Image (cartoon, rainbow, N blue to C red; front, top):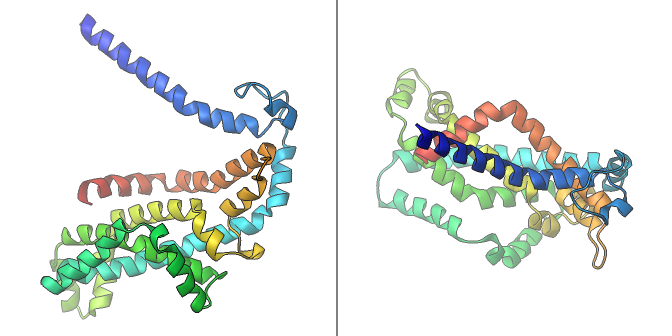
Length: 275
């Protein structure tokens, strides 16, 4: 009994210590947002003398946060929508059909997971520029979709293989076309895969820096990550504005998580089992 109590105490102590360690970076960033430039040169973990909300107001204005937030939301939402539609539709025949051709097509898509984006960055920019898609929203959406499509197909195909074929066959008997049968009978069942793809794609698109830097060069098209970089100089970094900008960029994701946490947790948990 004593051994069990001692083991439980050790587990609880380690858990509390780990929680404190993980909490420190969040406390550090949040406390820095309320400090004056003079206070930032002091002890990093010290409390601010007062809640200096002027940092947030100045950051919001300099970043043109309303505009860049709208740009980021638009690109992220369109990318998730296009990826789910085309990724799930492309996975459907790959999961249902058999034969070497379909298998080779599936391997071709999966091979894209192993190719880093940086390897094709230069030819991709030339290709996108030839199509006159540089500095356009739909150009960025197409690039993000192409980058995330291999993983989406991998995940959707795994889920679709586990769904019974009788569902769409029953829909065909009722007079549905193959496309309608898919959307009505099959797609609702793969909601966990859809949620997983949506969450992972949203996070990667929202936090990405390279693609907006290369393909969204106009000030009116900038995203949050690009605007944050304006506070980082070659020799000096404006920490009093950078930290509030970082917090502001995370707030929309936290709000979305609070409203969608039930679906997100279910989707990721199911994806870890079936995917």
